[in-house]
Length: 316
Image 1: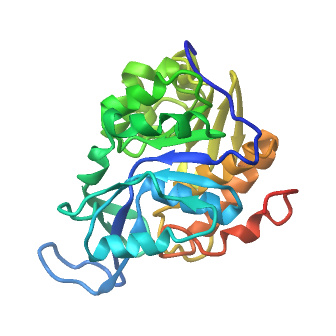
Image 2 (image 1 turned 60 degrees about the horizontal axis):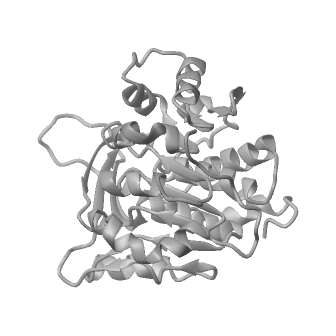
Image 3 (image 1 turned 90 degrees about the vertical axis):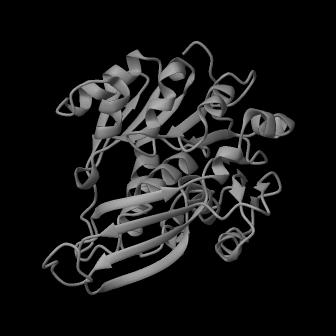
């Protein structure tokens, strides 16, 4: 890496999480789909979501202190998002607040097994997190134990974060095939990345059939020290300082409520442990268990995630 930082093992310093917060509107079929263009039986739910918000909530429920910087509207949905953020150790004082912009939203459709079929997002508020907005908070950001950002952020903001002097380690969540490409100009300034195979292949402009070890090796060659390559039900391929390890996913629950939020729980569990000096193996074990637990919940964050780290010294 040409520039970068390390995770600071300072319990007094919060983890800074920057990116999207939105309302999730989820619909799941409960009966076979007979024809397109028709109404079908299903379940519809709303809950607070957004990659950065989900990661932040997971972290504080696990026991970390978090400074969340996101965009919040001033409508009914925003009230629900604010309620979800009313948690101990979660500071939202640096959030952008708009009185004339609706809350960011994410509408998703799932099949009977809980797998995502399609989604539509409306993300206006996160675009307000520009370098000029964040500059007054640069001291809080660089003073964090770790920075976690998502690729919902505007490209200029991503470059600004990557180039901050004297910052701690900077991890990104790729979010989607479209948005992960925003990282291309500054890959050698990023310390960590969580993405899936399709996102990695898009970022590297290579074949989607590329083997996981090839994708991780290519990301290492581009300068990223730590890579969490999600393989879905097959587990995670972890690349760390040129060394690679495969971690299978624990047996999934018989019934999957939703896959939404599982990747966010994975990254939060891993980095929560890393900030406490745990080994890669212990950290990945917690991350995978958090992802597994998330699959049993219709909401983006399982309210009982803290129970997973009771056996980790100092985790809660």
